[in-house]
Amino acid sequence: MSSPIIIAVDGHSSTGKSTFAKAIAKELGYIYIDTGAMYRAVTLLAFRKGLVSKNNTISDVHALAGILSGNAGPVEISFRTSGAGGASETWLDGENIEKEIRTIEISRVVSHVAAIPEVRRYVDRRLREIGSARGVVMDGRDIGTAVFPDAELKIFMTARPEVRAERRYEEMRMRGYDVSYEDILSNLKERDYLDAHRETAPLKQAPDAELLDNSDMTVDDQVEWFHELLKRRHLCGF
Ligand code: DC
Image 1 (spheres, rainbow, N blue to C red):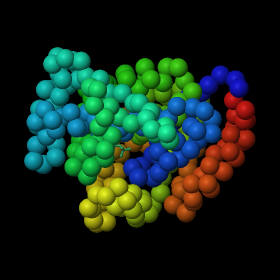
Image 2 (image 1 turned 90 degrees about the horizontal axis):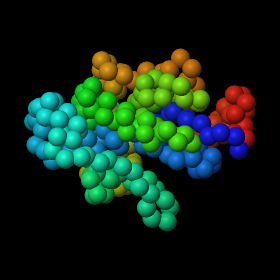
Image 3 (image 1 turned 90 degrees about the vertical axis):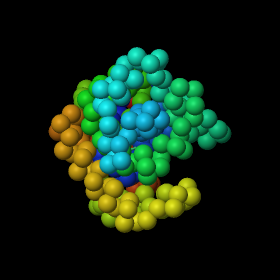
Image 4 (image 1 turned 30 degrees about the vertical axis):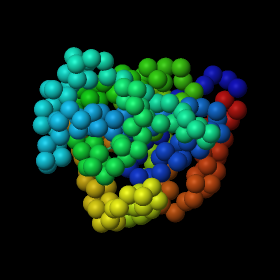
C-alpha cells in the first residue's frame, strides 16, 4: 500500500456519514474520526459549566472560550476504541461521554456551539493533530473545506430531509430515547439552516468533492459507489 491519505466526508446531518465513513475506514484499515462528536463534547462541557441559556444558546461565549483555552485546567477531548467491535467512543477528561452527547438536548444546542469561532479553532487544532499521521477518514461539515482543504479525497453527502429524519428517528428509538418524528425533523431542518448560514466555516460542498446523495441507497450501494469512485480517481490499491 502506498502512502496513506486523508478522506474527508462532509455533508448534512443524519445522512449516514458515520455509517459510510466507518465502513470505508474498515475496508482501508484507516482510523475513523467523528468530528461532530468534538462539538457535542464541547456542548456537554458548556452544559456542565452552566453556560447554556434557556433558549439553547451559550450565555457566556467568552467564558466557554476561556475554559477551552485551559484557564480552568486542561480540557482533554479524545477518542478511544473499546469493546470487541472496536467502536470509537468519545471521552472528556477521563470520562466516557459517548451516550450523553447523543441526546436531543445536546443536539438542540450543538449548532450554536459549533458556530463560535473560538470553539472551531479549538476543535480544528485537535483534528489537525489527530489527522497529522494521515490514514484517516473524518466525517463532519468542514473537513474538506476548512480543516484539511488539501485532503486527497473529499466526499459530500446529502439526502432528502424526510429520509434523514426517518433514519435518525429509527436510530434514536432503537437506542431507547423517547423522541417524536416531528421534533427530529424540525431539529434537523434548523441545524441544516444554522450549519449552512454560520459565518465561520459554513457547511458547503468543496468544489473538488464528490457528491453522494444516498436518499435511495443502501449502505452496500454506497460502498459499491465508493469502490467505483476509487477506480475512477485511480486511487485503487493506495
Ligand atoms: O454530525 P453531528 O450531528 O454529530 O454534528 C453535530 C454538530 O456539529 C452539527 O450541528 C454541525 C457541527 N459540526 C460542524 O460544525 N463541523 C464539523 N466538522 C462537524 C460537526
